[in-house]
Length: 252
Ligand SMILES: N[C@@H](CCC(=O)N[C@@H](CS)C(=O)NCC(=O)O)C(=O)O
Image (cartoon, rainbow, N blue to C red; front, side, top):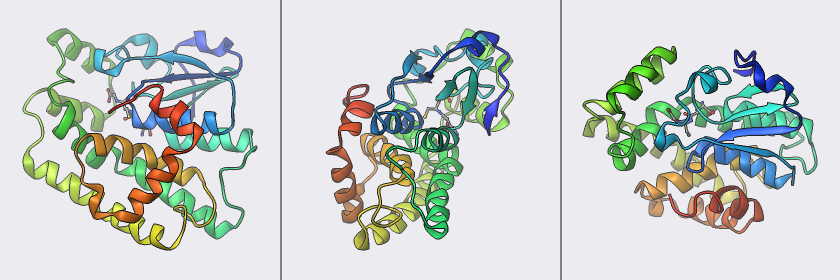
């Protein structure tokens, strides 16, 4: 979605880079990784999503979907993690996190878009089923507040289900099979190349490594994908991974 006009006008006066994020959010990890790769100063607005700190009229006035991350850059609000990291990389190109050729650029965007496309039905469903179902229960009051604020149908249904009957084993299996297709593809690619798009570290790697981190923590079996494991280990060595992920979320 990219740039949005916020109902919460307070943020219009913000100067510099302000990130609304949560320590354990894989979408927010992407943005912290990019900020650390580029060594940019930024102001943290931390919202603990397990305590529902994001379910407030103030925050929905910044991000109409009520999810993290949201970036406010000199008063301009940008939502959706892929759009945010793309914006940062285009605005602060040093060091570049994108390939030069149009063909490779298309591949980079394919990996980025794919992660966002499968976020609710595969990533979120797998993680909630295996790890979060108990932790993310809403009180009656929180549920009412959420239903009043949320207009995104997919998220409304997701949270209705996760807060009530939960996900079924079949739904969790379908989520896992979707993830398998992408990690099989990534494994084939990474058997021949150092990074997802080829020889250059790009936003595609930054988009996917938080999924490796959080899905591993939720019990997804990566032993089947040795090239993906080796890639994740290379990424863990980077300073950005330590600062952008581990300092905020040592263990998922
Ligand atoms: N497509 C969005 C997804 C954002 C998203 O779902 N964020 C999660 C954390 S990774 C969140 O805020 N969850 C809390 C909730 O759904 O209430 C993006 O890529 O930024």
